[in-house]
Image (cartoon, rainbow over all chains, first blue to last red; front, side, top):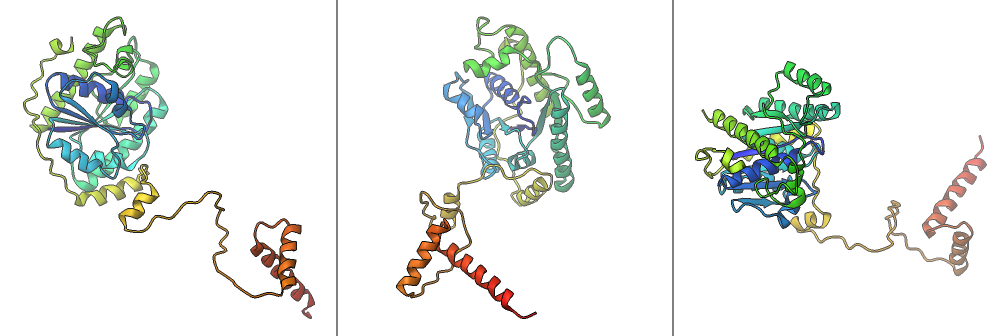
Length: 223
Length: 118
């Protein structure tokens, strides 16, 4: 069992998309997955109402700072993967979810605003690690990146994070219509059609690479 | 295809009880709040009160903002004094009779101060 949490205080950074990709792909591999929606806007819970979801996937909404720890605990006993999606703000649920995570994933877009918000989350992470004496493994990952090129802003921000020795996932999640299509059409990447979204195969390859890296990391932490 | 491309061995990830130390919750809460990660999901006032076994406050339409006038003050007046207070309230466009009394007291205080020999 592994708890994976997507967090950053910046809204629109790619937390929900990342959680959806990871959750749906793992469930399609046959693993039992619970997506916990702790965003008051309830994007995942609303998606689940209409979506054609894999059988192994369930979504739990209305999770707040009052019940997030208990919900993670409850779902960990029933699922192979518990994936938590949080609101893009500095909220207490983030602190609680962080403390229970086997892997923390922080999406980052190549904008200074995103970098500043990711830094806030990383500061809280360092404080929690120090005080609770827990490892709390974390990775920043490039999210919603233009597929064709790496911008100068991305290089600049990436260098700053590298200098601070903050580890990145090797895989970048690109800005793809197919990723939006999961939400827009209520289908997994597997069930979307080429008529619905362009570059579907590339999106699937990108998602597969992302999920594989996350699984390899989690396995590595266990050794 | 995702299914075709991926061949993940996920056997290591079976459901298992998570050993959560609830004693850490308070520490995490204070750490988070110090870092600016605050309460966002407030529980409605009524459910909080119910949790504590307190009767929820009845909400009424058209209630006014608090004026801090919360001390009852019942007196018997001559009818002409009573009516004069209401006339003044109309003349001075006061929302409450208490306002007339407050203004009257302020005027009386001022009057007394001015009369005091220096």
